[in-house]
Image 1 (cartoon, rainbow, N blue to C red):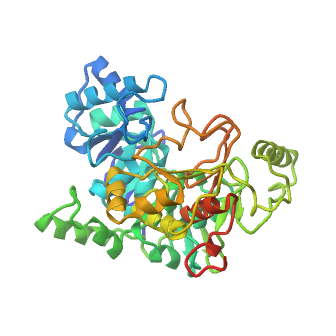
Image 2: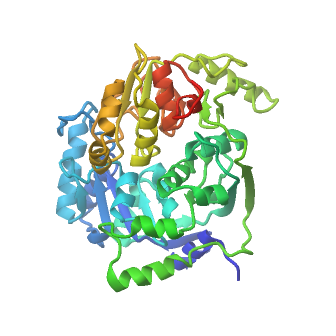
Image 3: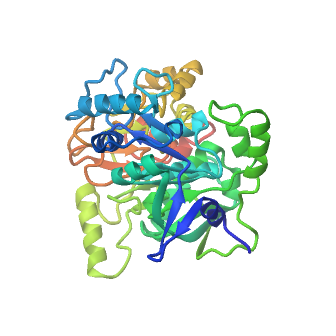
Amino acid sequence: MAATLFEKLWREHLVESSADGEDLIYIDRIFLHERTGSIALSSLQADGRKVFCPEHVFCVMDHIVDTYPDRTDDTTMPSGRDFIVATRKGATEAGLTLFDLDDPRQGIVHVVSPEQGIVQPGLTLVCPDSHTCTQGALGALAWGIGSSEAEHALVTKTLRVKRPGTMRVRFEGELAPGVTAKDMILHLIGRYGAAGAAGCALEFAGSAVEALDIEARMTLCNMAVEFSAFTGLIAPDSKTIDYLRGRPYAPVGEQWALAEAHWRTLVSDPDAIFDRELVVDCGELEPQVTWGTSPQHAAAVTARVPGPRGDSAADRLELERALAYIGLAEGAALQGTAIDCAFIGSCTNARISDLRLAADVLRGNKVSAGVRAICVPGSMQVKAQAEAEGLDKVFTDAGFEWRSSGCSMCFYAGGEHFGERQRVISTTNRNFESRQGPQTRTHLASPATVAASAIAGAIVDPRDYLPGGNR
């Protein structure tokens, strides 16, 4: 019987089905971070329970650590040190692999896992973080869970999950220069709404997806959760296999040959039926930027702030609230909107390819006077590689602050943040109210758009700033 990729992965990991509609799923890998992982580990210890398979559990310090070069356990996050110390103690006592602050492999969980080869096609992977779906870009079934679910998975290597439906989005056509995976996903969410994939496991496919490199595919899957998907995934191909070959946790020798043979079978059958399907023509796609307080408030950078999505009073109220917060007016041009800050970082767009793209824009240019610009590499390995290529000098010569790796500045929880009411153009994944600071106003965009806007001091079309542009 024909099956989708999701259905194949679900079937391979199904332990049993229950009468209440939930399935018991076997979990291959678990990732923890110090903000929620410390809670799960402390709870297990208090209950006298042990991690069932420590060698399959990995832990990072990323969410509440400061990103200054001379950082320590003492962070600007209230009680941050307590989280870090508790996680270190719990992970060490449980025998888990810990990417601690002084580990050259430390970084944001969804960057570390792929670059270490921990996530692999066909595996199930969970983490108490909503953007775990990032790792579906390598053909894994990866999704975010809560701390209590993490405890259950740590002890039993299983989780009870209601099986989601299936959805496929095919991006067809060729992307124009200056248009990226970030623009693809922002366009999708902006067109179909933040609930567009609710209740579904979302597979990305089509010629434009096949043309993306693995890091760009991670950007696409990262924001599947902003489309309300259970997870996002992309079928593994030769690019996936080449990406994983030789990574520390990848199979070797005979095991590699067996793994590769299996990975190549992990595709949706040609006649597989999805519950929902969408097709997006990438031929006319332009760089995107958000204008409101949800990823669905997205439009081409050349556009004007649109009207309400529908005719109801609720639609009008949503628009009015978003515009009042963001400080824009219906019909206003997005280009030319002055910014206070520019941020390149997060699990969405802080990999080496993202930094290279931003550096292409910044090289030989200066950040506009009065704009604070910050770059936070996605991992310490990304940071080291960027420095080996001289990208750090491109950023600092342009006027960017060059930081150590972490999630800081992506979400505000009392630690590092941007200033009150400051307008920030950002490569992150959420532009909710106060997401990056108290009343901070965030515009989501690609690394190229953020870099170009930092130079201009206002939101601009990055295509004019890339080599060969019209500026």
